[in-house]
Structures are given as C-alpha cells and as structure tokens.
Amino acid sequence: MTHQKRKIRRSSRNKLRSSRRPAKNRRVAPRTAKEFFAKPKAFQDRWTRTTHVITEMRANGISLRQAAHEFELDPKLVLRLAGPALRKRANGRYTPKASDRLLRVIVIPTSDGLSEIATRDSREASKAAKYWNAVHRYLATGDAFALPQFKGKKITDANGKRVQLVTDFNELDRLGSAGVLSFESIYPK
Image (cartoon, rainbow, N blue to C red; front, side, top):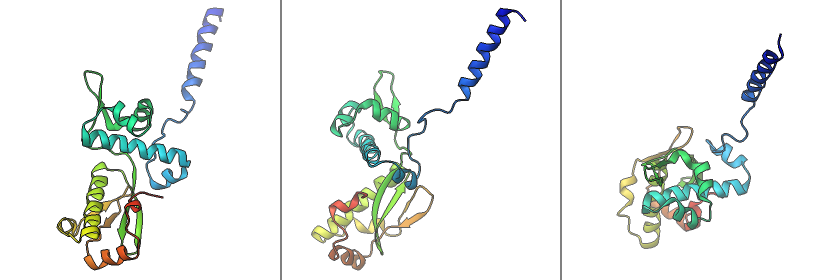
C-alpha cells in the first residue's frame, strides 16, 4: 500500500470517528416539567424569561432585540433556546410564529389549590393567562362577566393530560379567601 493511500484511508477513518461523537448540549430546550425542574434554577429563570420574550414579541409586535433587552437577555441566547418559535424574514429580522411548542410551566387553580402544569402549546398558555385575568377580575371587583366563557374548558399539559378550569364562583371565593389566589400565584415556584 502506498503512502498516499494510507494517508487517505487514515483521514477518512478520522472523519468517521468525529461524526460519531455525541453533540454537546444539542437539545437544551426542556420538553417536560420533569426536565424543566431538573435543570438549575438559573436555567429555569433564563428559560422562563426567554418564553416571555417570544410572548412579548407576539403580543406587542416588537423586535427580538427590544424584547430581549426588556427581559435582560442576549438576543443570541433567545435564538439558541427558542429558535423554533421564530421565523427569519427576508430583511434579516426575526418575527415570532403564530404559535409555538416551547415548554411553559403555568399555575392554575384546582379544587385542591394551585397546580403547576407544563404545557407545550403557546395557545394553551394564552388561554391560561386569559383565565387568570378573568379570575382576578372576579376576585378584585366581583365582576364575573369573563368567567362563563371558561366553563367546561380545559388546559392540555405537555403529557396530553387535560385539566379542568375552575369556574364555580363558590369554589373561587373559597380559594380566594384562603389566600391561595393572588397575583404572584400565577408564576411557578
């Protein structure tokens, strides 16, 4: 075997070896609540703020840079963590897709108190936010106008389990007077 053939064979063998190496930190996005809570607190905080950046961009039509600055994040980090939720336009700017599959841990009231639920659908998270607004409006002012639209509605978590939203006035009054339902309670611990 000539020296040239050995050299080619060796270089192709090295390419094979390098392609078999596992990718480091390839999948950083948590897909379940268990994965989310297994991550360090600093990551959980960054992830939550990243999802807020996408939500802010979608709700107010602001740029990635503005939204990332508002939540004290680097736009490159947002792209790395939440890239699938964004679309790059022809002009080079990023816009959020109509909905996304980023994991969000939300808290909703149940008859047993508050439950943390992980959902992988931005529409479910929006439904939960509208529900919380209706609950807080009812508890603060007694105005129950928005609550009936949630009667019989459910939130689907990341595992496909459906959780019923509490719309019974007596149950909400009981939870509210027990101090379970406060503005801070909508965020996971």
